[in-house]
Amino acid sequence: MYRTKTCGELRLTDAGKEVVLAGWVQRSRKMGGMTFVDLRDRYGITQLVFNEAEDAGLCDEANKLGREYCIRVKGIVSERQSKNNKIATGDIEIIAKELTVLSSSLTPPFTIEDNTDGGDDLRMKYRYLDLRRPAVRSNLELRHRMTILIRNFLDNLNFIEVETPILIGSTPEGARDFVVPSRMNPGQFYALPQSPQTLKQLLMVAGFDRYFQIAKCFRDEDLRADRQPEFTQIDCEMSYVHQEDVLQVFEDMARYLFKEIRGLELPAKLEQMTWHDAMKRYGSDKPDVRFGMEFVELMDDLKGTSEFSVFNEANYIGGIVVPNCADYSRKQLNELTDFVKRPQVGAKGLVYIKYDENGEAKSSVDKFFTQEQLQKVKETTGANNGDLVLILSGDNVNKTRVQLCSLRLEMGNRLGLRDKNVFKCLWIVDFPLFEWSDEEQRLMATHHPFTMPNPEDLHLLDEHPEQVRALAYDFVCNGIEVGGGSIRIHDTELQERMFEVLGFTKQQAEEQFGFLMNAFRYGAPPHAGIAFGLDRYVSIMAGLDTIRDVIAFPKNNSGRDVMLDAPSVIAPKQLDELQIKLDLKE
Image 1 (cartoon, rainbow, N blue to C red):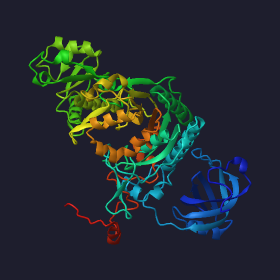
Image 2 (image 1 turned 180 degrees about the vertical axis):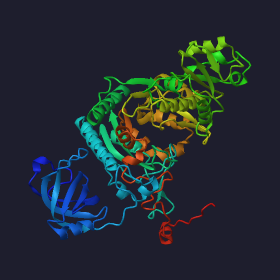
Image 3 (image 1 turned 120 degrees about the vertical axis):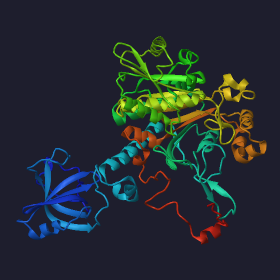
Image 4 (image 1 turned 90 degrees about the vertical axis):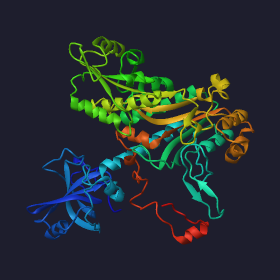
């Protein structure tokens, strides 16, 4: 054995024992005739002591050690005189007797400490060094623990873990596929799965009535903090269940995880909010309900009641009440106006009303509205003296609500109302079955083509499909969509109607999903499922803003792996084998 103990387990009760440790040099310092070395491994840090008076040669070897040298040390555990209460091994040190350099190291490009001096790109290039940092490693340990807990929880409920193929056929719905050329089938391509959706439905037809998988998924999407081109899902499917059955099982799983990981008790029953209410109250289908500032519609109070054309031409006027912010300065209000005008938000402007300590109103539209009219807004919004009301308007109702949502979240951030140690979870239900795609100029499935329409709305499917609700549900925590799923269509005729509404010809439906349609003809059970983003789930538990820090080897915002330099050009010989010729557009 290279070591008898780890660098995180020795305590004062081990004093006098001879031990062998191995790890990396965190730092070293020379003080008089003594050299102190902090030795680090995955489990912690232990201080080593080399005494020039006792062994000058050994001390001289220790003085040659550089940061991140990998070494092995034999020594005696001794009580430390100057104790360090910041580390678990701070009561002891090792009086070194033997030193072996297992591997020397170049000077690392950044410090391997929690507060490192390395930028994102540099740390991603040397990710194997970044992973040595305790803060990063602890995220991976949390991920490991969560996956073990999830597997055990689902196993106890008779779920069976089944692996599904990574090389599958391409489907036109949803995000863009990553495609893989087939050498043995020239001119044909596999696709990497966006999710194991159709495969897990086939498992239900096969009689595996409770399936799960910690599944790798791939989507060729533009990236942001909570997206990666490859990500991991907790993918689940169940037979012979209704919507409430699914919600109960995975609400219990959330309750179990928050208790085990964070020591927190979620409510006995989570709130269920309809998509319509979520958009009306928060302008988002993943509302952050850790704080208030719910939207108040002001059409009756402000449209057509003055000569202010911006309001008079609007199809939606909505506001939020920001408590105790009537003292906001002109500079602060200008900052908020600039914020909503950013391309990411897209509003044309911002109207404010301040209500001072005496309740008197002061507004950016004073010249258009009387004090009496502004007091009516105060009454409608429920604002108090000292509050600030922020108002947006526009001709597209949902678009303006989404803009107001961005403003609400910005105010939540500014006022410290989005505490990462507070967790508010809920279900969003009754999604629209279809949504309009400007890019495709047609209706698209909001979730996917296999989502069951609400039986109450089936009569609308042919004439008014945009009004049909789906038996679909999303699990939301702190304004983040952590998971989502739906009841599935298991009736072949209804599935064919869905494809028709989505614009598929019978031939296209057969080419893309014939295998599934054919399977349904052999006694498909009623079934439903859900998938959680494991990366997002872990990042929420860890209190992080990005999922990159819970992934061992993530891509950057351009979808590149800067450590492996991927994607990269392949050799002409490989292209020849695939019978592919590149014709790149400039």
